[in-house]
Amino acid sequence: MRRSVIALDRLAALVAGLILLAAGAAAVAWRQDWIPDAPDRIRSPWITTATSADWWPWATGFGGLLLVVLGLSWLARHLPRRGNGRLRLTGSDTSGRLTADVNAALTAAGDLLADTPGIRSADGRVLLDRGQLVAELHPVLEPGADLDEVRAAAEQTGRDLLRLVGRDDLSCRVKLRVARQDKTPAVPRVQ
Image 1 (cartoon, rainbow, N blue to C red):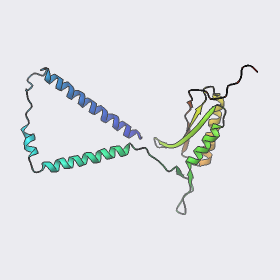
Image 2: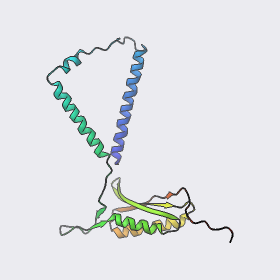
Image 3: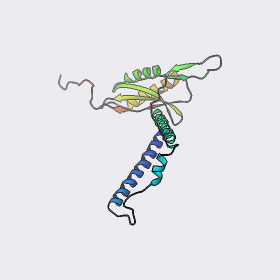
Image 4: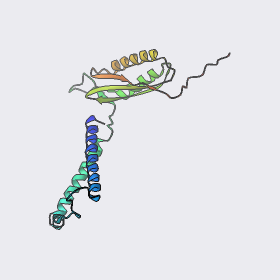
């Protein structure tokens, strides 16, 4: 999800929460007679005249349609973005387009990284992070993995991936995850 959508969600939740808190506090204060000069009943004759007007059904229909459109656009902004896994390469022009299947490259990089002792598995994805194209690798480490060896393998795999894809604007990021239990075979203590 994009940061602007997250920020808008948080702002909307904050505003809605403040409005609900204020309305609840006002209702309690009104019920307990903590508000001086508060009427016993709320009278609003304009509501009854508005609901009987000729324009009322059109206005409520338009308002409902507007809310449906806003709700659908809000849902559409929260859908995960699925790319086809192809990146356009330099050298593309009007005579043809050069593309690379990044998913295949990430799968190969993950398999290569998983061959390193101490790494159980690895996968990856390409994402757009703050306007920067990033290839993210996610290796799962055994709890007893040698971190220097993992670091060296991750750096080499990242360099190989960037060279393979051939895009200057692509960065590589490795996010390490540690498995809960070690699955490496136990070494017998007595032989």
